[in-house]
Length: 333
Image 1: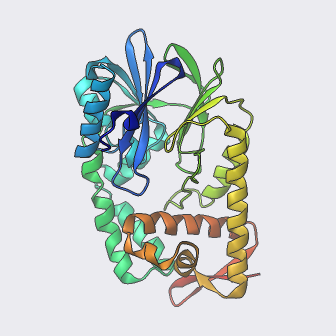
Image 2: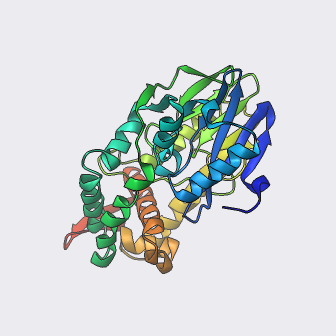
Image 3: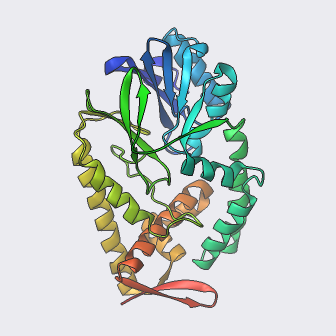
């Protein structure tokens, strides 16, 4: 945690408090938000359950003279552990209900339910093996995923949300918007009076949201993401509150930049495959660099995002694929 409270806590219009909860990844922190009303606070996306995060929360609440019992509602934009992990910890200390979409919660149970993610890890390892990942890297996937169980415990009792409806936060009705692609079941929340958007990880400033193939889910997550971006353009947003980096104002402009980024990446992949046949893994190494193989967390994100682009290109008919010696290889058409 930064030694500067000011670096970890920042005030925004409407009394919204941004808390930068530290992460043990290259992202450095995830944004949580405390949104006030006459009863206390709604807590949005509390962060990953680590000792450092708990210490950061103690300091953040103390710096704003907020008691933990003042938190009456816990709201999750989506299920990824850096957003979901402390929900149960906060619920145990506040008694607050935890709200999440049904699809998002189903994913948490695949990874951290009674099976503790064993089946999911096997499915993901099998997927990566089919796309050419070397055995020494495959052996790291299961233990890496299992390491997250402690970082999302205790798990909360939840109440489901549905897109298309409204949810009251800070005394105002926020419209819930289905925002798939980065995470199935992710919700964005739009407050039309002030034109504010809680956008989770769907629209981020400065960095691009990860778009990953997930075993057992729709095989064109990238198309879902691009369609979602298009629908989000319909909203007039004066201030967007993202899951990472700082709140920003150029919402529609940023959506255009994200769409353009993926178009460039798709064209780059087609060019690489026209030069030579690739597996998903060799292409991942070309796109992200060989050094990424030394960090299992980053490699998993890079590999799954590479596959998302490959699946999208194949659905578009811009590339082809064939199984050779037990591995799927992508070719030009």
